[in-house]
Length: 365
Image (cartoon, helix red, strand yellow):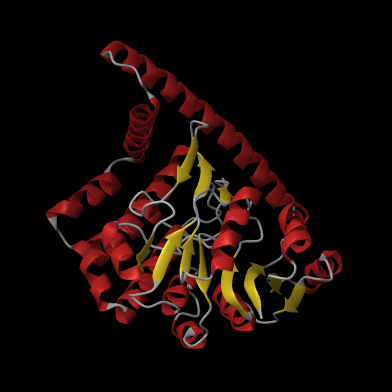
């Protein structure tokens, strides 16, 4: 049995999968073939599936899944794995090789039940940001129980590739049966592989270079509902998780509100006409009623769109100033704020051009 299975669900994305193979998977096979299996579960249409199968290296385990649905693909994929650890990886992820080597050291040690992976990304202001889980000391370990109370808004496994987990197949199929349409099915599944006493560690260097996309295929509100449902499933397994459930649900709603405003700002393309703001208002009222600490959500959702967009810009620029401006005088900080505001407007214009190009290509195909 291998130490790690890299599990890749895919659907009709031949180019992305080929790029992942050329930039990462082939290097893994060159250096870690004795330790790592690579398993691709393909739900693609027949023509795309043939292309994938022909293009993939023969050492990669390829399976065709004739059923449909992301949740189905993930559950079948993980049930097919046979290794000490599993790592779910998106077919368009960008893996940092130095980080992966650091991850493999943890895998070889075989001491942790879950290994969290720092993510590097680029902000709207072209600044590099690394999510290094500040509530968890680098290179030290904790337990799942401690992890869940240290940061009340953090939800492990919400990003597909942000953790490696010790494989336990016991609950995979039953969770899929309950949540067969959940686009965050990996959250309850990976939680089900752990206990409150499970040992959690974190790699000391970024492993994933996350690229913010400008087009999102799934709906914001259905995604929010899936995330809330995933949180509720975790509560069923770990009742102590309920203490901070409202904070995590609040973080999920704020994330959905941010995506909605980014769409209105021109930073994000959503190829559907769902009435997002009204749907989000209903969910805030349904979950929090008129609890004072959550009224700010309703305020933002009740603002006219142009005011919500302006507020988003001011907050984004303000956070950038707070994080990156070392000036000491009020005038210098104001100047940095103005420059940052200009940079954000340039980014918005650039994204709008990308979205226009994407829409034109989408219309042609």
